[in-house]
Amino acid sequence: MKPLAISKAAFAILVVFFLLAPLVAILPLAFTNSVFLNYPIPSYSTRWFEELFTADAWRRSIFNSLVIGAGTTALATVLGTIGSLGLRGKRISLVFGFIRTVFLLPMVVPAVVLGVGMQLMFARYGLANTYIGVIIAHTVLAVPFVVVNVTASLQGIDRRLEHAAASMGAAPHVVLRTVTLPLALPGIISGAVFAFATSLDEVVLTLFVAGPNQRTLARQMFSTIRENISPAIAAAAFVFILGTVIIAALANVWRRRAQNA
Image (cartoon, rainbow, N blue to C red; front, side, top):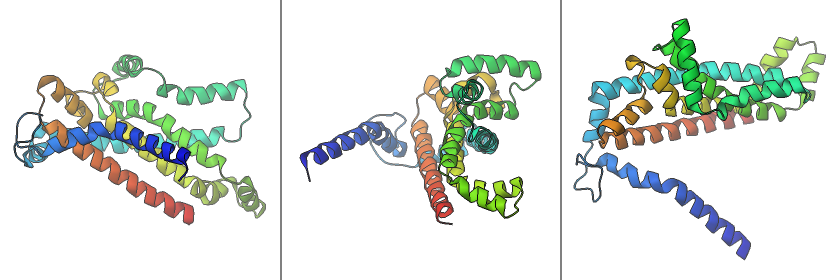
């Protein structure tokens, strides 16, 4: 190998190590038998995983995360896909540039600002401390990720395929259903995965808009860190990461099948 290629590979390995080192340090503590997060591990046990799935607070938070994440994924995927289709092929003008900025604005606006605004608005319309309110709040953050992925997928579609279908007498909605959406499916799947991950990881907005009955896994972990540091947090992080890896792997398989179809 050339020296430049070796240096690039070494730099990539260092970056990966820098990103994964905190995970490698904390995840083994999920299997400790001690009540403290410290090394060396005195003995190994699965007691904290048992607590994670038997304690009422942890079990309810996992259930809430799955319900809210599923609702957020469905709503954000639909809205983000519709928005991407609406902005597709539009010329860069002041109006459409502003609309694109509005779609991406939640990615850069501080979550605290969004949380305060949503708390005031939801209280006015009776959505505070409700599952619907939390799903809407998480959807606001998740839609930009769907828009980015679907827009990139739509830009790679050859418009001549759609024109060919239209020239054969297919109505616009038929072209959309049979040509455009299947070709954009890899981007839609990626956007849905990002939407679910965003909802699963969100803490700040949840603190503002959720009530005691809507406590998610991320919020439960945050509260546990503040009140009592327990190895159950490491067990929750292990489940978090394992679930994310599985979902990403399944989405990658589905996306490859969609591309090869």
